[in-house]
Length: 179
Image (cartoon, rainbow, N blue to C red; front, side):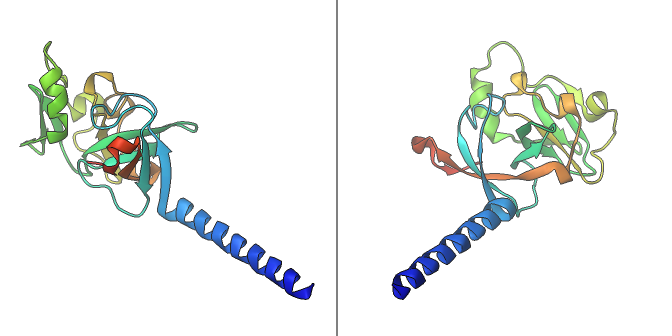
């Protein structure tokens, strides 16, 4: 009887340790998220499931998840880092005056027959700031015509970034690293 009680106690301890480890990993290191909407198409689709890495500092062109409101998280691509100037002209992104190759937009640009995918703007026109402020980033959705992003909500405070989308694990036919 005592050995069964001891074995049960060992199982309970193992279960508690496993739950604590899972909680630590989910809260501090990685978290699953579900894409809600089409603002990141064609890169990500509605209902895709991703793993968000909470450890890495976001870099230009990384896809990040951030707190947009008290109840809503957004997923967008980092375009501008602190100190950057941003301009879009003739469907080309310019960061600090240099044209950038946005390879991830190629499928959408090829489908767009009625004008530019991204309308012309400068950082100052959409945010009232000459450069991306310290501790903030400028983000855009890949579906530029249908995305609520820094053009509407302003720059995003780095403290509001939950993490960087790193791996898509659903749907199964699209499993892989997010780019």
